[in-house]
Length: 322
Image (cartoon, rainbow, N blue to C red; front, side, top):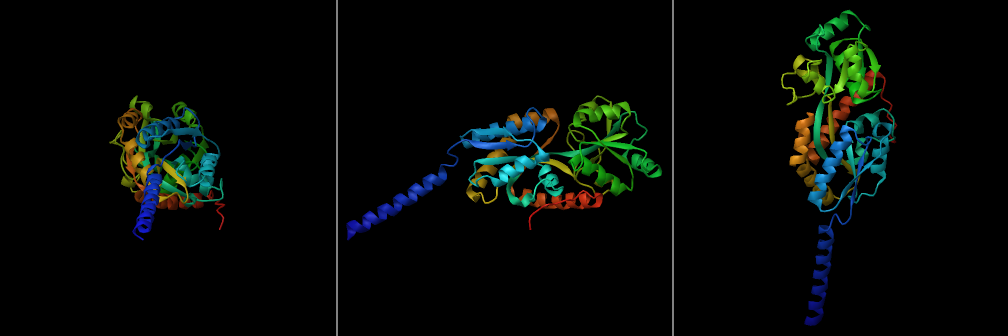
C-alpha cells in the first residue's frame, strides 16, 4: 500500500510540476505585434521600438507586422479574431475608439482586452506664428463674430484631429469650416494661409513651433505637455474638452490573466527603457505607462467623450452587434 501511495503522490507531484513548467514557459514562440499604421510612420517606428524592447524582457521575438487600413479596422478585427493565447498583440491608439464608433467595424473597444498605455500626446490647435490670434480665446471670439469664415484643417472625417476640432468649436460656440488635409500637408496649408488653423497631434507641428513659424494656441488634453509647458490646456481656458492620442497594447478577449500580467510587465519595462525614453525626448511625446486597470478606466472615459462628440456632429454610426 505504501508503494502505491508513494507512486500516486509522485504522479500527482509530476503533473503539478509539468503544469507549473508549462505555465512558466510562456512565451514559447515568437509573438505577433500588429501595427495599424503604415511602415515608416512615427507610430510604426515607436511600435517597433516597443516590440524590440519587449523582446528583451520576454525572451522571444516580438515581431512587428503592419496591417494598416480602415482607420485601424483591419488591425483591430485581426486582433479580435485571433486566438487568446498571448501570441497576438495589437498596437492600439485613439483609433480603437474612433473607428469602432464611426461604423468601420461591428464591435466596440470592449471586444478586446487591453494591456495598458505606453505613451500619449495631446491634440493641439495651431496657427501661424505671426497670426493676430495670440490665444485660443482670441480665435474663438473672432470665429463667433464671423461664422463659417475661418478654415480649420484636420486629418480626416472621424479622426482624432477631427473630433478635437469639433469638440473645441462646440465648446467655444464657434462655427468654422472643417478642411480635411493629410498630416504631411496640414502645416503647409496653415503657413500658406489656405487654412487659418489646424487641429494636430502634438508632435506634428512641434518643430515648426520651435522654429517660430507656427504657434500653439491650446492643447486638447487634461494636462500640459512637458515639451511645451507654457501652452495652456483647453480645460484651463474653461472648455470641457479632453482628447489625447494614446498608444498602448490590446490582445484578444479572454487572454489568460497570467499572460496579460507578463505582457503588462514587459510593456512597462519597454516604455521605461533608455531607447524608448530617448525617442520620446527627441520627438516630444510623453511616456506615461499605465497598467490594465487604470487603462481600462481611461478607455471607458474616453469612449464616452468620443461617442458624445460624434453624436453631436452626426458622425456616430456604431454597427456593434447587440
